[in-house]
Length: 409
Ligand code: C5P
Image (cartoon, rainbow, N blue to C red):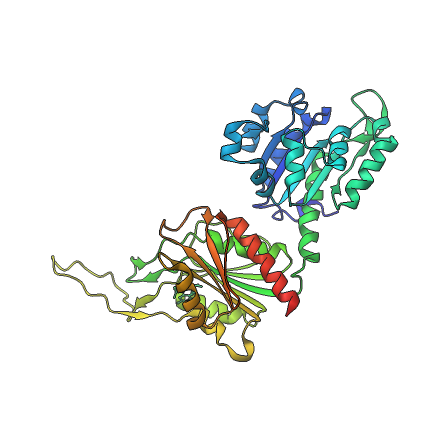
């Protein structure tokens, strides 16, 4: 097991859906949330009715910094965040403590409250931290349920042995908080090592570029870098060796990849060329089309009301350069087309003109910077229109398509 102190950044930006069921060990969950958030993870809590007998929704909300979801039939919860989304907008679902009862329900696919419904609806990995009386743990029914869950690749941390709240001694104590943190750390480390893209190298560009006008001003655009960074993370999570070349953004640097920070298109091209050869290239950056034809070392002065002409020259096209790189061309080159009209037609035309394999065409008429994206994936087979998804979900789905393609080619 990887001791979490040795890999302090593995949990950074990981989204954990924490399901708290009704065992005495629920009192340790506030500490678990604190430890996970200290490591940069975000934690969203679901509290079962019996869990609420041991820990208050208020304390979980205060420590997780967000709403605690309790009710399957609450209209607000359903309109703001349906149980399907709740279970999918996470990197892992952790059930801690996991009682004998919730393990039994999971084993049998029962879905009679928000927690069990989310567990049945999720397509994400699940980890449980069992916690119960020693006799309940040793009961053949629990053993059979545990075997069923393990067969379904559900990860199990603990339980440990020791004094129990009920006065008995033996196995059944929930794993210590730091052991759960270590198990989650281990999970993310080994998922990347064993992932379907391990052995593949990927280059992702993200964010805007800033093109200096003079030493104090620059040309820029509103790209947030959210989509590009999410794609880099999704590929790294599947085991790819990722180089993220990013213009200036507010996004935190992902931990499990090489990040090269650049400002201008020229620097971005140089960083991409230095990263080559790679197997996969995804150009999600909103590269400025122009830069100043000549650099100026002193600040341009106002001209007393007269208009100012800036002499601009076109920037190199990184996507085209990578697509037409001859023998060092990546096996798969993907570009973006941010369009405000005729999105699919413009995307198809861009795929041809740039010489890339796929184009992710998106509608930016509502502007850049939101958390959701509505995209069409344009390949040689045509356009596949995806529903509106979070940028993370778009990244995950694109990474799955990339994996399928790389496996086939
Ligand atoms: O031509 P346009 O900017 O619409 O093309 C968008 C696609 O081309 C994006 O994938 C973007 O990252 C890429 N691009 C580039 N270098 C440029 C301009 C665009 O890589 N100079």
